[in-house]
Length: 522
Ligand code: XMP
Image 1 (cartoon, rainbow, N blue to C red):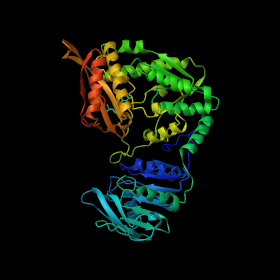
Image 2: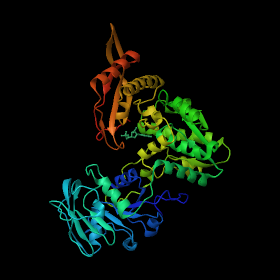
Image 3: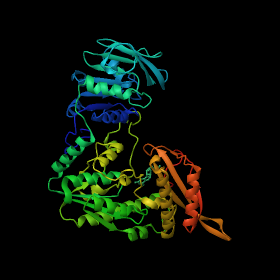
Image 4: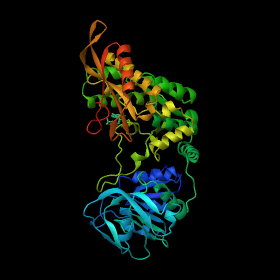
């Protein structure tokens, strides 16, 4: 299978192909290049040369990886790659491959070490053009090159690595022992730019404007006069996907917003106002709150709640979709990290997994998929949304889980607890927004505990529920730390909640990181 490229996918752009040897940084290489307006795609290391050439790449990057070239069976690329004439940049493991597969010697490491290092550039090389002669870099001391052969020469060294950078200018093969893609290598982006622009001669500019035009053309070509149905949640991905498809096919896109009764104050209105109203999407709201709440009645187990919600969602959506005559396509906001095939030899490079997408929709409905975001990272989706003029209220929204408030009312979901939680959650969001903290944090919400505690208000004793505030900093939701919100802000949120929400007499703040805790409480 041609990984990442489906039959209906047209080539988005030519650019750089990155072969993934399992480094945790592989996705970063692609992101850095795309920030430089160089289109980059990731393929597994074992991709066939035909599949690589189908992308019409200007050059190849061999990523790092946890393996050792000495181990029998360690990952190797299609050997014909080296006869393709394409420029190659090998990073760490990628560099060792260049050396070891071409007669050089790589010496095994006793143990792998990571850290800052200072690189001395010894020779003029297009890879280092315009960079300082002494560079701060993030080094990975694993195996290292020991002897070079053929046309390779040393271009840079460090105190501990005599072969920090090598090149064979004739073949346009380059190897570096450090990681240019991480922020700890401040001039790394320029090095990658040099590779793409100066060495590979790639001039095409990949930016949001050109991407937008091209994606719209692709959707038109795929869908033609067909009809597309889309489950719109009002979140970033489904909103941007729907806006794109709408631009391409207008009223032939049918969006369905399912009100599960587990939404926050303003969620439904926001979708109806911006997406149905301002953007003019063909939007139908299916109010199924009674159905969801009745099925959840008395259910305490978080996973059972999730299952019930997932199944009910599909049922409601399916029923609505069947009311539209002649639908052929289903729109999905699949993102690139879900498309990249993970290299699982010794630990996958792809850690982001979405247990979140509304699973099961496509299989059951036998529709063809339209996935306009399948080559984009999350930050690129936001940029594309901005390019289309979507409001910050949608693009800057924190992630909100599919099961909604059901997993934030701990234990059985009762309408009374949902009501209290909604009010507390709104106060928290209002205060975060007005203080500027909403945009500085990754996700913030409140959970309501099913137990009561004693309090005192005026002369009266109260016996009410507790909410706990959760606010975290994260990059991808896989790990997170609790946000250091100012005490004054926490105090304001707490006193507003207790005085404005009758039924809550205690507010706590969750100071656990992930791991060991998860972000959500259920
Ligand atoms: P956890 O709680 O696993 O959350 O640390 C990580 C991120 O995933 C979101 N999340 C979900 N999203 N359906 C979703 O659509 C779910 O069942 C679900 N569970 C967690 C969570 O909000 C956080 O952003």
